[in-house]
Length: 265
Length: 256
Image: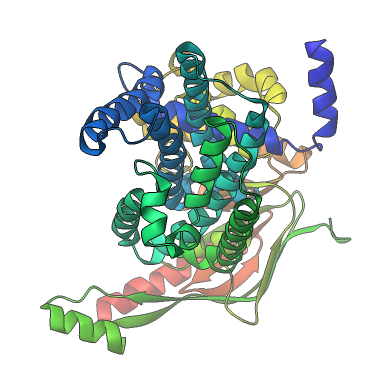
């Protein structure tokens, strides 16, 4: 049965090995990240959980728990955030870290970007499973609205892919972009509804909801996975348009500047 | 595939790099240099090259250091774009082999074989089949699970060559690849491969200082001198010409 299915999948895949290759690139990167540590892949589980625990302890002090199920509130936001942070930071370096392939072998250069986006998806999916497991353990209801969740994963991946393409191209010309991006990340971390209740931020600065491409994703995905609510479809559409535009700019800039960039690495 | 079996075609290809030299001095001097472009220099690495490489051909490229050989390889692969007015095209899968590059030091020999093979377009099932052959060819049976950073240059070269050969790249571009590595035994076997490559219709572009290999295997040789093509022809002709240019250069240097 499984064999037959695998064979069928193989017939769908065109004669080249593109999907296999992207997956292998992603898997290899994932292994590099963790294999050199003593605890290995366990870090992929432990690190996010410890982070969430620390934030939870600190922020329940500060905010005196004005949000119910605050631990889950943070968790649902932070797993989106961590995917965004890790994949844009990784994507920024792709052209340098994958130079040994880009320069020597003929293949579709975008594959290394797809792979870099996929690498962090592995950790993201682990986080989602842990999140759901904890919801079940603590008795919070999981509703069928969960089927909407992949919409936000795809939206997030589009956004990160676009930003990776843009940032990695800039990185060749202007190395300072990695420091600049750290600052942007720091700012985004605090203007997104990761710890705060969303009303707190957006009542003060309504424009922020639309100006930053991550806010809508965090709000909607949280509604779906944690509260069992329908997403705000207008916001979903808006975020897709935004991520799509960023991706389009990314692909354009990559195609335009890739050859120039590779000379300068 | 084009009708006349040309796999690499360069027409009026030139390549000019604009580089900025580092400015020493205070911030004012630096920003002035940045704004005015006073530290900019144009370097014509390759000038107006016309060249066609046929399928199955063994093309040698010779020339003194800094004459644009490596740039020419990059132009062939399309990684560098030629200056306006020139076109470069390559037909088929290729791998560029050069020392020290091409592998990730953090990965083991096994992982590198799979990654490079897959990126070149070989399916994993194929790689499973060929894996032992690759390892045996590279004589790295004892280092399958060793990270590449612990490999010597010779070991890396053997591995890269083994992957390139077994991944069946249509075109293999070697950039001073055997410069000072590989013992006699490995050389003998790479010679064997060079011979087989003709049979399989593999195209090889070989940048080298090793006159023996060029003389023995190259169908045609290109002589580059300061970015210009000084001649294309049979190995004997071009190698004689090459020796002369070196002599002239030595003489002119002495006069200076």
